[in-house]
Structures are given as structure tokens and as C-alpha cells.
Length: 230
Image (cartoon, rainbow, N blue to C red; front, side, top):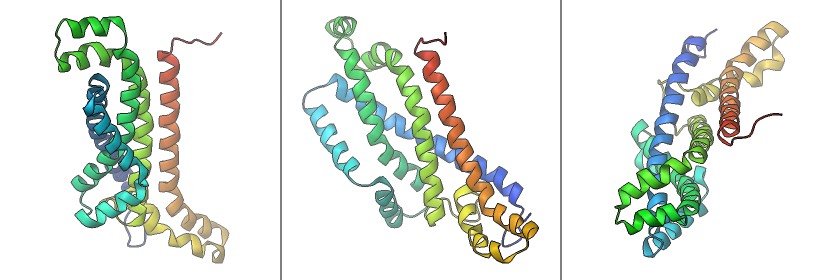
């Protein structure tokens, strides 16, 4: 069917998938780059830099993420580049914590100390000594953070501060068609189902994608953990 101004819902669902998932993927990659680099540096340099970064991340994590994002988007605007930068910066605090935690288990091992005593630079230590040994938990975290970023973008679009019309987006599609749910009890059954499906279809796509990514993350953790079903 069509939405409230006659646009095809199926076409907007398809284009909305490209926009929503593409922006969520770019945001997750950027947040992992920011949080991952800072987490590796903090794990290697356990002196002042670790303390400064840790306290700064604590301050950012103390503020509710959605409220902070709403405030920043209200100040700086709701363009797509601004949306990506704001969400990536806020989400990088969680990735910093995870990267730092798993890296601390590596920097205390003998081969890392040997590489440091050889005089290897920090870039070499991060790329060749730490990253290959923490890729499994980071990849699992990447899938989980993608789900959280995807849901945050959909929530911001539903509130009117995410991806702006006329760009198709699942969150904004739910908001634009949500009013039809109010009129469903006043329609006969076939018409009621028709109007109820307008907001439920994009909402169902959001739920299905989130569940599917979580299943993939669980499978990846099972494969990389070395455990096998008996």
C-alpha cells in the first residue's frame, strides 16, 4: 500500500534499509576507530594518559546517551554527517572500556614485554601484538554495538531528530504512520489490518534485524571460543 501522502511503503522499506543500516554501519566503524585507538593507547600507557582518558569517558558515560544525543543534535543540527559524528563519539566511550579491558590481559604477558623491551613503537605494539589477540571479543562487540547504534538512529528518527524527510528511514516511517493505529478499532477487519500494518512493517523490520544480528554474534562467539556441541 501507500503511506499518508501516497508513497509506496515497500519501496520506502527497501530504500530505508539501505539508509538506516548504511548509516548505522558507518557510525559503528567510526566509533570503533575512535574508542579502539584510545583504548589501546590507554592500555599501553598506564600513567597519566590512562587516567585522563578514563575520567573523561566516565563523565561522558554518566550522561544518558539518548538525552545527550538529543541535546547535541538540537545544537548542531540534524544532518547525516552530524548524526554520525555525534552517535559515534558517544558510543566510543563504551568501546573504549571494552578495548582497554581486553587489552590489559595482553599487555601483562611475556611476549608483549619482550616486544616493548626490543624498543618497538606504540603503533607496532597495537597492530602486531595486541590486536590479533583481541579480535574475537572486539568483533562480537562490533555486532552488539551495531544493534545499539541502529536502534538509537531509529529512536532519534522516531523522535524527529534523526534522518530527516524525505529520506526514507525505518524509524521515521514508524512515526509517520503511527497515527493509523489509533483509527484501527473503527475500521472493519480487512481495512483495520491494512492500516495497522503500515507502522508495524518498519517496526517489525527493526526488530528482525536486531534479532538476526544478535544470532550472528552468538554464532561467531561460539565458533571463536573453541567450544563445540557434543
